[in-house]
Image (cartoon, rainbow over all chains, first blue to last red):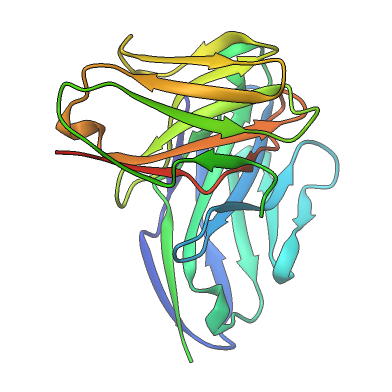
Length: 116
Length: 112
């Protein structure tokens, strides 16, 4: 069965530190990859997505992610975090199929706390 | 404001009761999915509708059912509520089936 693993459940950083959140998926076919963010008390928001093309994807708020097909990974990065980046980050995948395969399969999330 | 509106925002129900949660999507968003997010967990896929037909379902029992309407609104119905049904229920819509979803703010359901 398809699954998504996020390696870090809780991350604590100081402002200006660099961030990398790991995400690996298990599926051998074509995938669409997403990172969503959930700020405290707010709804899920799409940070960035990869469907095809350049494996380095740039999203909102200075985030980027790199799709490495050989490693089944889609790690999220930001060179310099801010206090306002404190949130829950979710990696998600859809497989390129019809019907049920279009569902988003989610990781358990990574809670990021940025200290000012 | 995301363009996806869910109602109500909070709801308290008694075990055994039935509940209907509502979602209004953006015009042109033919795909709608419903997710259950328990505290401290990632969202779990309940089901997906495309052009008013269910075209995908997660590991939820039949007492979880849904409808999608031509006006881009949808419903999630849960019968015979159980305590474990307490969670945040999220509606997400997309103009296609590839998965670029926009999420609503969710309905927080508490079953007592």
